[in-house]
Image (cartoon, rainbow, N blue to C red; front, side, top):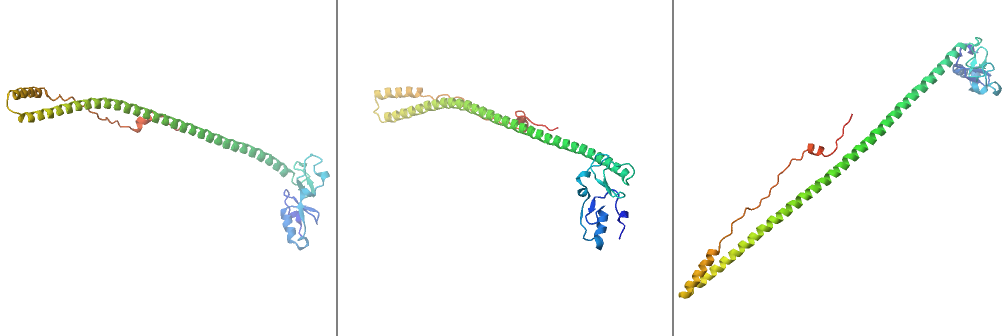
Length: 249
């Protein structure tokens, strides 16, 4: 039979053979499984085979978590009296475990703090974006309303002025048509007089017609009103002066 005492690790003994009633490490367990005599042996955790009454070391009052290969008995990690083969290693393991636990806690705190800081930064940035969008949108609506009001006022002013000027022109046109109509009437009288017998009455009528013709004079033409548009170039710079802008930093 193979001497398993030379095969077992001095610190990793955590298996218990239920058939041999011995503690062993993973290597020992593998070797036992290869032997015909112990192929079908059942193994359990070493800690599960420590009775409730001996769950803690009587000397240090700590739970058993190791098995001494020499004594073949469960011991705690603080058993450093020198009689156990792994006493110095156990102290080192205990210190490393404490250090690792503390370092891991510190790193986790740092990582959590970094993650939370990033989350707060994203939330703050999202709120700033919402404020900028709302401000630009509101000022855009306000600027559009001001443009609409300004255009409406200009259209009203122009329409009133055009209506007044058009009214004056229509009055002049009406007077001009009246004079033209009177001219047609005088022309009709002239033709009628051409068919009248030549006598003293005709002379008198012709004189009167001549006087009426002298009175028929075309009115002086006024200065006609004119209207034109003066285009103004609307550039992005002009718009930027009316609406808030944004900047990154």
